[in-house]
Image (tube, rainbow, N blue to C red; front, side):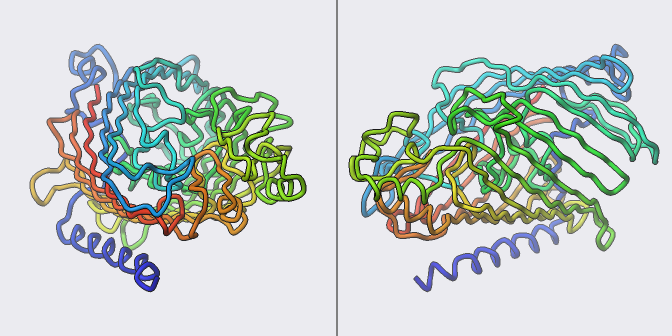
Length: 485
């Protein structure tokens, strides 16, 4: 037990050591999907032939293909339950192809259309990991055979308010243009909440950096989304020089972690609000963000599910008449007996900072109330993550990226009590539990193959999968191929 309590301190020191090493190495801060002039893609090709203006666009088109493979090795488990990570070796993969189309409709008005194809094989039915799901592209109930769908279709309008010029480069889902530093932007349609909230530039675009979902955003951030991670809704954003204020309301799924969405935005919704401030510290850029969310959804409280079962043992998992996660246990409580209109809230802090022009660090932490089931994201109730990414300028590989990070997630006391009685939620449930924080340390190297392709190697070590000290640790190796065009 003393060794487990020392792990966060040791891992923090390890990451700090990595930061110091990369600071002396002088690599380059990872940026999210920047389009270098020499990149081999369709828009640069047109620009080089004077058929397209990359500084002021009326339209653009980009694409990307990403394949990720992860190999989980066998691990020790004192017991295995309905929603456990299977302790034998498993191979998982995702294959995605995405097309990004942008069109200027009128002055200040833009439309974006993003079709996508995905095929996947998860680990243990995507069960048994709470905050440290090893591949951020995995979707709940995702298809094994590559299947097309429309991930995003939305409109944006920008009202210029004044300030200094701000150059926007040509990127996926961004038309090149010159904005003002003071502006009001409205967005409406179908997209991911993470397209606009918690935009961390150090961890960056995970198609080139970390693999684990713990580094995609706050693990405890139960943002409204369907099983693929997308929602319909609207967003207002006020940019005022170094300050940005965002607020949005989005559709949750009809049932937790499922595809069909509930469009009754006056009755069920996920609200998000974020304040961001860009700053300079010791001559280096950084940003700090405070994000809060409030969900009003048809979700079950853990205490209510326990009370229903204790008051009437026939109200167990095997007798559910509504949606449940597949448990057939006659001796366990189930959230199906507790679902009604409930409120879930959380608040998080995110800080990113460049140490030098070529090294960045980040820290995220979020506290959610932990009283209700996960509805759209991970099973985590509280989370923290930190890490560093850099590029390999000093070893003459400026397009390569190296990174390391640590993340920990916790569940509330009542959540653990529910799981300990044999209950399950959307992702975890070992039948019983020796409660502990689920932690992951990850290290990766992304090797550039020319200007628009990367191959990556990754290692993850996960302690206490599903917040259970009776299982694990788990070792996972990963590989990735990412191509942009």
